[in-house]
Image 1 (cartoon, rainbow, N blue to C red):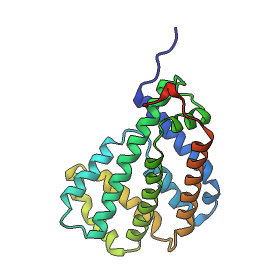
Image 2: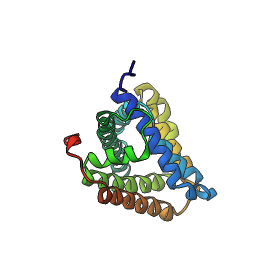
Image 3: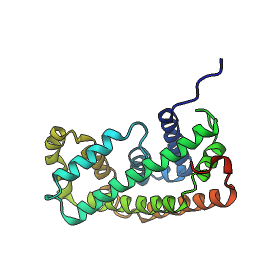
Image 4: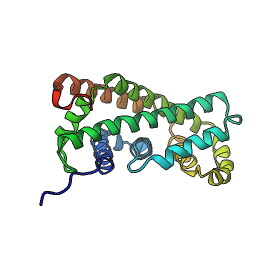
Length: 217
């Protein structure tokens, strides 16, 4: 009997794992620098999260709403950008996962299958924006990590976050604070990622033609 096709959620989780493996391969050279190991792990594990992101994303929104009056404008804007990045990434992953299911490739899809689905989604402007806002978010977390008061604030917010069911957001910010605080200049790290991601995006869109069978996602 032919196995049942994967569900959208199963495909999405496999897609996220594939993307993190791809990122680890693309940036293996950065991982060789002790200075960048923690930054890269935060980038792979926290910005590109594997699994059901619903709880984490909801916790971001809860804490953002609760502390809106307490946060300064810069911190508030940074958290807003994080929310936007996560929502956009969620939508883009949904598009690619849906196409992979439609293509019938199964959970064992190849890198070539992935890039075809990525191209068939046909959302170049959104992909460019994802890269841009990724850059903004990395610089935001770094700026936050350079302010000692932020570490104190994160510690004092832990209890409230637990009561609100918003611990995932505080944990995310705390891991970012810890990973970035000892690195004074992240420009090479961020520029390398931005350049390679844009180059890869352009290659996929230039090399892979659209397929009418998969139009409309």
